Length: 395
Image (cartoon, rainbow, N blue to C red):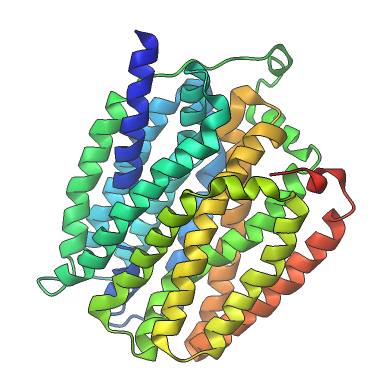
C-alpha cells in the first residue's frame, strides 16, 4: 500500500513542477519598464536583491527541510511563490518589484534542493533510485513541452492587460499549495556516520569533499550568468526589434528543446566529466559573445532557445551525478544540493548587480563583458580541475 501511495508522488511531482515554473518571466522586465521612472539599472538592483535573499535563505531552508520535513518546506515554497505573483499583479513601483523579488527568492530557496531530495527519497522508497535522472528529466521534459505553449500564449494576454499573466499565476500558485499538501511523505534513511552531523555547519563542512566544491564553482559561474541575464535578455531582444507579443516564443522554444533533449539523457553517459567541462568552457562564453555580436533578433532568440534548453537538461543530469557520487551526507541531500545552489546565487547576485550598470550604457557591451569574464573564470577553474581524479569519472 505504501508503494502505491509513493507512486502517486510521481504524478503529483509533474503537476507541482508545472505549477512552480515561472512562465511569466519573459514579460517581467518588459512590464517593469512600463512603470513610471524605471530603468535597466533598477532591473539589475531588484534582481541582485532577489539573488541576495536566495543566498541568505538557500541553505537554512534546505537544512530545515532535512530536519523537519520536505513536504512542509514545499508547502512553504508554494506559498512564497504565490505571494510573489500577487505582488507582481498589483505592482505600481520599484518597491513592489523589490518585495516580489524577495518572496520569489524565498519560494525558489525553499523549493531548491528540497524537491530533488524529496523525489530522490521517493524513488529510494520505490527501489528505483538508479532511475532518478531518467525519470526526473523525462517528467521535466513533458512539463517543458506544456510550458512552451503557456509561455508562447501568455504574452497575448497582455493585449487585455499587462498584469493578466500574474492574475493567472495567483490561481496557479494556489493549486501548487494544494498539491504540496497532498504529497505522501517518503522515508528518509539515516546512515550511522551521519549521526554526528547535528547542526547545519557540520553538514556544510562535508561539502569540502573532493570534487564537490570545485565543480560547484564551475557550474555556479555558468548558472550565475544564466540567472543574472534573465531580466536583461528580453528587453535586449525587444531593443533589437523582436515583437513583444512574440517574446514568449523564445522561452517557449527553449522548453521544446528541453523536451527533445530530455529523451536523450543517456548520451551524457558516454562522456567523462572533464569532456563536458571543456565543452561548456568554450560553448557558453561563445554564446554570450555571439549574443552581443549578432543584431538579428530572431537569430539571437534562437540561440537563447538552444542554449537554455540544453542548460536545463544537463543540470538535471549533473544533479544525479552529485547525488550518486558527491553528496556524502545522504540524510541531508537537500542541504548539500543547496550548498551548490547558494554558490550559484552568489554569482548571480554579483553578476546581476555588476552587469546592470554596464547594461545601462549598452546591452551589447554587457553581454560582451559577461562572455569574456565567464571564459577567463571557467578556464582558471578547468585548469585547476583537469588533473584531478574526480573529473575523469563518467557522468
